[in-house]
Each structure stands twice: as C-alpha cells, then as structure tokens.
Length: 432
Image (spheres, rainbow, N blue to C red):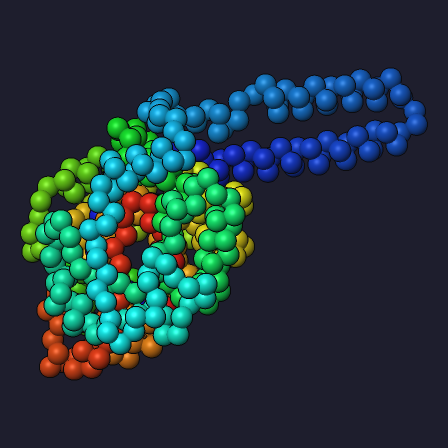
C-alpha cells in the first residue's frame, strides 16, 4: 500500500512499425514473384526485364520515397544540453537541480538498528523494511504540509543504493548491481540513486525550455480535483458496480504542457483546485492504457484527440526493453512490460492510498515526491473499497484527518516513508 504526494516534475514508433510491416509484405510478395519467374524456363529475356523492373520499384519504394515517420519529423530543434562527463553530470544535478540531497534525516528505531539505509547489508535483513506506526508518521509530518524546511526527519526504512559512489570503479558498480538484484528478487522496496542513464534524462528535462519544446502543440489527458486529494476511479459497465448517487471525485480535462505548467506554478491551498496530466507510452502490440490516447474525455471534450506519447520510450531508455543494455536493471520481465506512465503533478497533490497489481519502478526527474509505503499485510487495517467498486484498490480513509472512531484498526497500520528527489528510482513490488 502506498500514499504519495509532491511534484514530478518525437519519435513515433507506431508509424515506423507500420512502414516496416508494409515493407515486409512487399518483400514477401516480390520473393514469390521471383520464384515463379525463375521457375519459368522459357521467355528468359522477359524474365530478366521483369526482375530488373521489380528491383527498381522496390529500391524506389524503400529508399527514395519518404516514409510516414520521415514526413512527420518535427521541425522544432530541441535545446542542446552541454556535454558533461559522468562525474560532471552528477555534480550538476546535485548542485543545480536537487540542491540539498541530505535534508531528509532518517528517524532511528530503538527496536531495530540492524542496518543503515545508506549502507545496507548484502541481503535484505529480517523484517525489512523497517516500519513505524502510521499515526507517528502522520503526526510527525501531516499529509497536507508542503512547507519547505532546511531539514526534516522522516520515518524511512527502505535502502538507498547510490551509483554516484561507484563512478570510475567498474567493480564497485557491478557489485552494487548484484546487491540491487538481491533485493529485487526478495520483492522488497528500495531506491536506486544517481544512475548515470537516469541522470542524463534529469539533466535534459531540467535544461532551459527543453520540456516546452518537446511537448509543444500536443494535448494530453489530465484530471482536475476540487481539492488537493486525487482519487482514482473507473466506471466500466462490464466490471464496476456503481453505487447509487456515486459522485466522480475528479473530472477529466485535456491540457497542453504549457496550460498545466501555468496552473502548477500558482500556489494553491489544500481546498483549492489541483490538476495533473498523464502521458502513456506504449510499445507495439501493447495496450498499457493506450485507450486514454483517443478517449477518456467526455462532454464538451469528447471530440478532443489526445496525442501519442510513445516518445517517452526514447526519452527514458532505462525503462525501454528495446534498450537491454540500459534497461536490464529496471525491466525485469520484458515480455510483460506495460509501457511508461508519465505524470506531471503539482505541489501538495495527494494520490489517495492504494495498491497496484503490478511491479513498478517509479522515477522522479524534477521536484520531489513523498511516498508512504506499507506491506500488503496491512490491507485489512486500511479499509479498502470492495472489488468492483469504482474506487477499488483504494482506501476509504482520509489520511489528512483519519477518523479513528469510524476506522479503529487504522492506527494498527505499520508504514515507512521516503522522499524521492531528481534521479531517484523507487522499486515497488506488487501490492505494496
């Protein structure tokens, strides 16, 4: 189970794949023609002329005519990011983007001091990750508090594996990768920090107007909530059982990146409207929420076309199974990969407590994002909506003001928290 809040903050593979498919069909058809012509013993001059004609047609179609992808190349030139070494890039991100990596100080646990989250043992220790009573966590840092502090104590229990400490030492990097895989095989949460492949994306996205230029002219699916609480919901006639008088907690709304950025840049109280946008990148043949590209909007927005966002697969090659040398640490089972869901939120936005039925690697590339994590064994104390409810998998409890009279077992929930900063990747096992 997890609860989160904070900021997050083009190459179209579909068209290219379509061209490749058409080319493959053309080649197969041509091969059959070649075989039939070569089998003909007579009329050899005609055969040679036809072969030459077919070869010229194929050459013309494959190399002279522009493909759909070539025709659709954007005219915008993206800002050029300065060339930096791995160490220079790390220093740039730490000093200019993250700015203060050490402001979140782990609170000790008198009952469990068996490991240091920054120097974890080779295998997950017993009862990992360290957890705490949920009300201690919420009283120490109320869920609606987004006040900036020079330092803040947090109830962190998950390990942090920092590749920044291995720069220039290949043996140390390989050793750290083996340790990370040991924790992943144990299906426990952990944080990967300062992987150079990830920092390249952080560096790029925070450079000048890179995101504005990359996303200009595109429209994406967004959601608006009357408060800072963003509750997932799904009304599917084939699956959900909608209660009488059910009120949708959020409203779908199309946004451009510039429109969202203007909203997110304005300070809001917890009782004012909040919004976010999502962009889904799907591989060929995968669904991965692709329905939100052409639908998901209704009413006055029903005719709005949501733009394709598959370019994120190239922007984040470490999450792309087509780049195995960069993604093997993050894509565990490539054939079950469900694409990338890229979300841009705003300060104070809260995603209500829930679990996912799949593994997740969660990356933050700008701003910060606080996660409160709980082992699946806590589910009975979190009062989840029942299956087939529009808000299934989510807790009924308002974590801003938990009603312990109505939900008395909630106080027995054990959790830990972690604040992700730019360059951090959190591994979340199924149902955490």
